Amino acid sequence: MVRIRLSRTGKKRQASYRVVVADSKSPRDGRVVERIGYYNPMPDPAEYRIDEERALYWLSVGAQPSDAVRRLLEKQGTYDRLTRLRAGESFENLVSEFTGVVVGAVGTAIETAETAVEEAAETDVAETASDAVEEVVETVSETAADVAEAISETVEAAVESVSETAETVSEAAMAAVDDLVGRDEEE
Image (cartoon, rainbow, N blue to C red; front, side):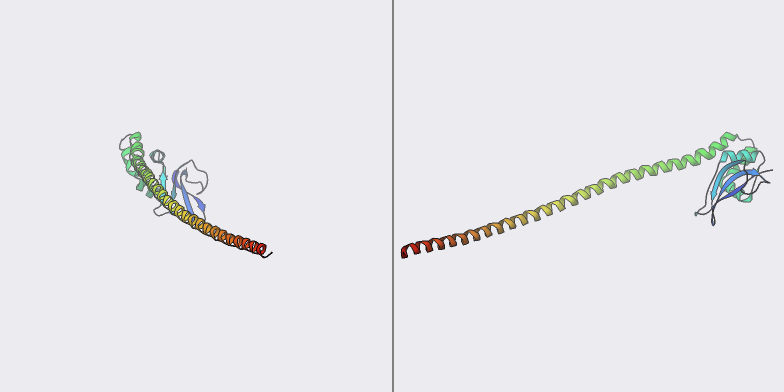
């Protein structure tokens, strides 16, 4: 007999599972006929994905699911589609219902979210860049004013120092000339 069951993977205390189709006599992690999905109970809520087409196929040919896989398939809605398949609805219709509507709606939501994030990012980048440029201009203006003031003070100090030095030199030169003129008169 063929069973759809879980095959354990992952580390100790961090189990995750593959949803597999295997012979009922093979060991839990032994040889499998086909892998049709996964189940990760660690996050909250648990993550799982089972290939609807393959699950419906195996259920329709008589594979028996384990209790855990049965709960996952019921959550996913596969059992409802299986009863409709047995009632005569087309297999392709049921598979497209699962993959088209749910995945399509999620895809549209993801695309809408991506567009909104991109637009928000562009707006935020422009505003941030504008704010940064304004801050840089303000800082440069303040720094330029400080530098101009410092240069002006330095030039004024240099002019004053040169004037004082010129007066001192002039006074010293006049004193030297007076000394020379005074010596010449004495002789």
